[in-house]
Amino acid sequence: MFNTRDGTEGEGCATMLDMTKLTDSEIKAALRDLPGWSLDKGKLHRDYKFADFIHAFGFMTTAALGIEKMNHHPEWFNVYNRVTVDLSTHDSNGITSKDVTLAKLLDATAKKLQ
Image (cartoon, rainbow, N blue to C red; front, side, top):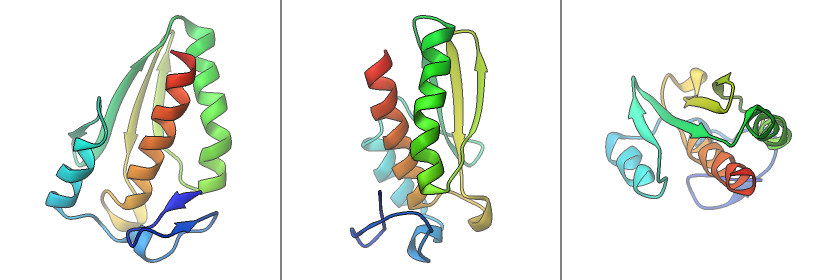
Protein backbone atom coordinates (compact mmCIF):
# COMPACT_ATOMS: atom_id res chain seq x y z
CA MET A 1 0.00 0.00 0.00
CA PHE A 2 1.31 3.47 -0.80
CA ASN A 3 -0.02 7.01 -0.56
CA THR A 4 -0.45 9.17 -3.59
CA ARG A 5 0.18 12.92 -3.59
CA ASP A 6 -3.54 13.56 -3.13
CA GLY A 7 -3.54 11.48 0.07
CA THR A 8 -5.37 8.45 -1.31
CA GLU A 9 -3.93 4.98 -1.06
CA GLY A 10 -2.99 2.71 -3.91
CA GLU A 11 -1.46 -0.68 -4.44
CA GLY A 12 0.68 -2.18 -7.16
CA CYS A 13 0.93 -0.04 -10.24
CA ALA A 14 1.68 3.64 -9.94
CA THR A 15 -0.73 6.43 -10.72
CA MET A 16 0.36 9.49 -12.64
CA LEU A 17 0.44 11.47 -9.37
CA ASP A 18 3.01 9.04 -7.99
CA MET A 19 5.20 9.69 -10.99
CA THR A 20 5.16 13.50 -10.69
CA LYS A 21 8.56 14.83 -9.70
CA LEU A 22 8.42 16.60 -6.34
CA THR A 23 9.41 20.25 -6.09
CA ASP A 24 12.37 21.31 -3.95
CA SER A 25 10.01 22.56 -1.24
CA GLU A 26 8.05 19.28 -1.29
CA ILE A 27 11.31 17.33 -0.92
CA LYS A 28 12.39 19.52 2.02
CA ALA A 29 9.01 18.99 3.68
CA ALA A 30 9.25 15.23 3.14
CA LEU A 31 12.76 15.12 4.63
CA ARG A 32 11.45 16.74 7.82
CA ASP A 33 9.32 13.60 8.28
CA LEU A 34 12.16 11.22 7.37
CA PRO A 35 14.77 11.28 10.17
CA GLY A 36 18.12 9.95 9.01
CA TRP A 37 17.41 10.66 5.35
CA SER A 38 19.15 13.36 3.31
CA LEU A 39 19.29 14.64 -0.23
CA ASP A 40 22.40 13.44 -2.06
CA LYS A 41 23.00 13.88 -5.79
CA GLY A 42 19.29 14.36 -6.45
CA LYS A 43 18.23 11.24 -4.55
CA LEU A 44 16.88 10.46 -1.11
CA HIS A 45 19.78 8.87 0.75
CA ARG A 46 20.14 6.89 3.97
CA ASP A 47 22.74 4.64 5.56
CA TYR A 48 21.42 1.93 7.87
CA LYS A 49 23.59 0.12 10.40
CA PHE A 50 22.59 -3.23 11.91
CA ALA A 51 24.07 -5.55 14.53
CA ASP A 52 25.60 -7.88 11.94
CA PHE A 53 25.32 -9.21 8.40
CA ILE A 54 22.32 -11.43 9.21
CA HIS A 55 20.29 -8.41 10.39
CA ALA A 56 21.37 -6.27 7.42
CA PHE A 57 20.52 -9.00 4.94
CA GLY A 58 17.29 -9.74 6.82
CA PHE A 59 16.33 -6.09 6.40
CA MET A 60 16.86 -6.32 2.66
CA THR A 61 14.93 -9.56 2.23
CA THR A 62 12.06 -8.44 4.46
CA ALA A 63 11.81 -5.07 2.72
CA ALA A 64 11.94 -6.76 -0.69
CA LEU A 65 8.41 -8.11 -0.21
CA GLY A 66 6.92 -4.62 0.23
CA ILE A 67 9.18 -3.20 -2.45
CA GLU A 68 7.94 -5.74 -4.98
CA LYS A 69 4.29 -4.97 -4.11
CA MET A 70 5.02 -1.28 -4.74
CA ASN A 71 6.86 -2.14 -7.96
CA HIS A 72 9.37 0.53 -7.01
CA HIS A 73 12.91 -0.69 -6.49
CA PRO A 74 15.69 1.06 -4.57
CA GLU A 75 19.34 1.43 -5.40
CA TRP A 76 20.91 -0.25 -2.41
CA PHE A 77 24.26 -1.64 -1.41
CA ASN A 78 25.22 -3.96 1.42
CA VAL A 79 28.57 -4.43 3.15
CA TYR A 80 28.54 -6.58 6.29
CA ASN A 81 26.23 -4.76 8.76
CA ARG A 82 25.50 -1.69 6.64
CA VAL A 83 22.95 -1.02 3.93
CA THR A 84 23.16 2.17 1.87
CA VAL A 85 19.97 3.24 0.09
CA ASP A 86 19.37 5.81 -2.64
CA LEU A 87 15.85 6.49 -3.91
CA SER A 88 14.66 8.24 -7.03
CA THR A 89 12.10 7.54 -9.72
CA HIS A 90 13.99 7.01 -12.95
CA ASP A 91 10.91 7.47 -15.16
CA SER A 92 10.40 10.94 -13.62
CA ASN A 93 14.09 11.83 -13.50
CA GLY A 94 13.84 12.78 -9.83
CA ILE A 95 12.20 12.18 -6.48
CA THR A 96 8.47 11.38 -6.38
CA SER A 97 5.96 10.48 -3.69
CA LYS A 98 6.76 6.82 -4.39
CA ASP A 99 10.28 7.44 -3.09
CA VAL A 100 8.97 9.06 0.09
CA THR A 101 6.58 6.15 0.64
CA LEU A 102 9.37 3.65 0.05
CA ALA A 103 11.63 5.48 2.50
CA LYS A 104 8.91 5.14 5.16
CA LEU A 105 8.51 1.44 4.38
CA LEU A 106 12.27 0.91 4.71
CA ASP A 107 12.38 2.81 8.01
CA ALA A 108 9.52 0.73 9.44
CA THR A 109 11.25 -2.47 8.35
CA ALA A 110 14.62 -1.38 9.76
CA LYS A 111 13.05 -0.41 13.08
CA LYS A 112 11.97 -4.02 13.58
CA LEU A 113 15.52 -5.31 13.05
CA GLN A 114 17.72 -2.70 14.73
